[in-house]
Length: 163
Image (cartoon, rainbow, N blue to C red; front, side):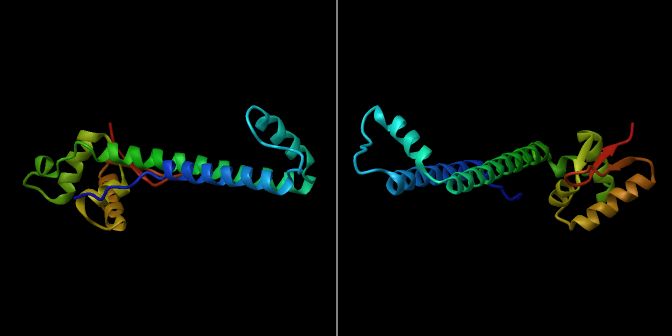
């Protein structure tokens, strides 16, 4: 059975929201004047006045913090997108249906004919082998001009069916 990978984007968004609320709370608590109250519709106006009154170095540190959090959100989103694409790649693969009388390499080639392309990690999960062994199998298919291994700039190698 293939292990389920949990998406992390929702968890990261929750953490960012908590950090945002903590920042706003600390901003209000630390820099509020005694005559200013935060009630009703005056909250937005009072928070903007409070933000304007904080030192420039604090504004810079808040900006750096939010840029880092934005980077973390983008990274989590991209990672979740990759997890979803790997799940889609694994869906609909029934190794017993594809497997014939031949070797595992024959089964891999039949699977590649069905899917047209597969990641090395997908092959290692399907056949429950090490990624190095999966790469060796793909190099064998490549040497027989049956497949081509594509090495993208980012990510892992992908095996494409020739023709």
